[in-house]
Image 1 (tube, helix red, strand yellow):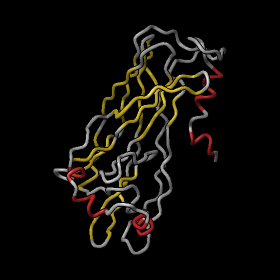
Image 2 (cartoon, rainbow, N blue to C red; image 1 turned 120 degrees about the vertical axis):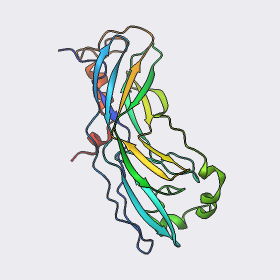
Image 3 (cartoon, rainbow, N blue to C red; image 1 turned 90 degrees about the vertical axis):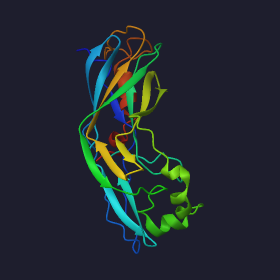
Image 4 (cartoon, rainbow, N blue to C red; image 1 turned 180 degrees about the vertical axis):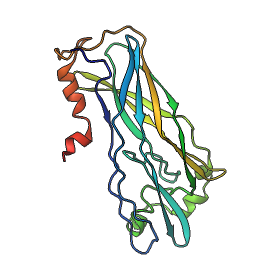
Amino acid sequence: MRRPLACVLALAAIAAAFAPSAGFGAEAAAAPPLPPAPTASAETPYGYRVRVPIGEAHVAHGEIDGVPLDEIVLPGGVDLAPAGAPQIPTRTVYLRVPWGVEPRVRATAGAIRPLGTIRPTPFPKLVTEGSERVRGLHRDWRQALASPAYATAISGDLVRRATPMAAGPTRLLAVEIAPVQWEPSTGNAWQFEELLLDVSWDLAVEPLAPSTGERGTGRGAAAATRAAALDPAAAAGP
């Protein structure tokens, strides 16, 4: 039985367990369950499509020294924004691509789920870790909120970056997606319930067979095993 090129997909990160800090008015924010795994379809010699369910983001509301702040907890998400900028989580998925081609990825948004009007924290986990996080900061969070950089419109691109990488004989594309959006002028935040990723490349490639594990157009079971090992959920075990 032959497997399509996109048979192995892995989520890049699992949301850490968040715990509120006493005295800072933070809501309890348990780590949300991971969404269903991405699924591939519409395979051709030039690419395939991946449906990426996002899961349900949660907003943890808190107050620090009387200032209301909000933290978005996204299933499998991480805060990669620079310190001082609004912390809007993104997620990374690893997509299998052939060697010797120039891969591209384009995203299409699914249904919108409103998250309300919020003021994102300017530093990661400022609400859910409370006083411990504040004491560890090397910058004043109040100054960060007042800085022009905080109020600057955030890119609305659904794909922030796509970086080729290797896992043994397997070539992957690490795709950072932005399923959560925030508009600073209004404070409105929303998430997309799913993203469709169209992965393509410039040369025709045959589907991968599971019976071979060498680098080339016929990688397969060995490559799939290595790619699957990148899934932190599988590595963590029950």
